[in-house]
Image (tube, rainbow, N blue to C red):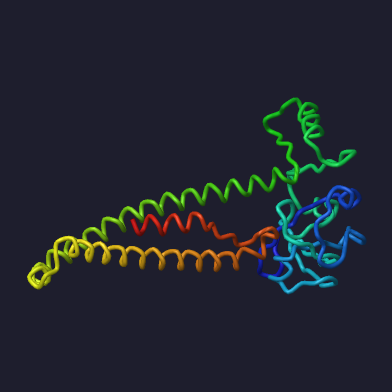
Length: 254
């Protein structure tokens, strides 16, 4: 659907049952009054469109019809819901072939592994249906990010290999072009061991400088990306993997 010239995500839920099935963190408002033309909006969408509780939301549905909705609540972004939540009875007439993507189930005693197993058994171990609790949904998002992170580590390893070859080539050319200078140092009393030490210190300085600059830029870009996506992920926080950073600096020095 569209609101003005912007695309918005509409999620239809059962207004009579949603209050006992889901409890997102509301920043303003609550499920009370939700239904009909009253909708709940996630924080990212509300901030993007300058909406707040009581704001009017003009929408154009997929069938071309227009409507005006009212924001009754603003909730914190989470992995379960996003965009504009409205009563499915309000949304259904404007959507062709609407299907249920999620079915929320409330169980006595709250979510548990036993309840999950019973639901799976009741569904006949249907591979087309996944039974998940809140932690499972979060793990799915985490696994996607971990896959991306592992790909970045692979590219980083290739970059480190190229950088090592570059440093070796630079030092080899430096030693070759400074033969006369090194010969003069030997002539004035600098022995072979000290010449080798000088070259090693030069290589260590170059490698550590590049490593520190790389880590600093990586942390900065990670912080910058976090600022962009942090509003859409309520559980996001910047965590620096200090052991890995120290390991990278050590490998750079070696």
